[in-house]
Figure (cartoon, rainbow, N blue to C red):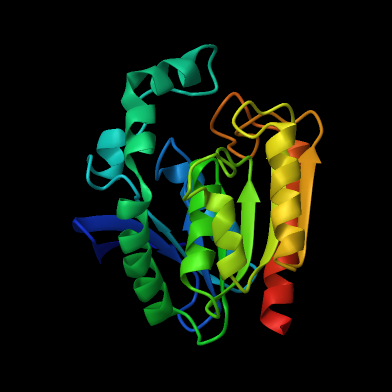
Length: 246
């Protein structure tokens, strides 16, 4: 349905999956730590089928192409996901700091706006992508109208540039679907996120999906949870529709 395009990002050329019809409302899709792969393309295609043009960039272009970084085995098999993450994935994730991600966000947004209409842009992010979606909304107030964040990790930290602090700079509506008992997003962090959303007077839903593990939306891994995934798609579709009506 879509195509792979090349985007001139902050530090080189990055692949990105672009799907949907040019001129439709735009959605920026932030991938999880596993990377840009067929699973991401399938999810982006589904969002595009609702009437959007969706851009999903390879955030790790500094480290290699999407095929070079993609899992070589089936992450649904016992131990395969854990083995993949033990192979340096978290080094890439931890290295994707705001001094890299925010300049890249300029490139992603510029490219998406070249293909979408002039209305508010939606963002959706998974795992590490959730915090990138939040940061992007803070960096582009008035442009980003909706933020979806699903099984996000590290949304609230003690650092002075914690992702949740960007909410106060944004003009977006937020929907968060947290994984149950997620060590990367404990209950205290969810509560702090709620306080931040309320203090910023941002419309939002900030919910825990009971029984759903971190990574629940990724059908190509052992963490997949069909019920939680379908719930997230319903919430995201409704959020994007509200963004268009605003």
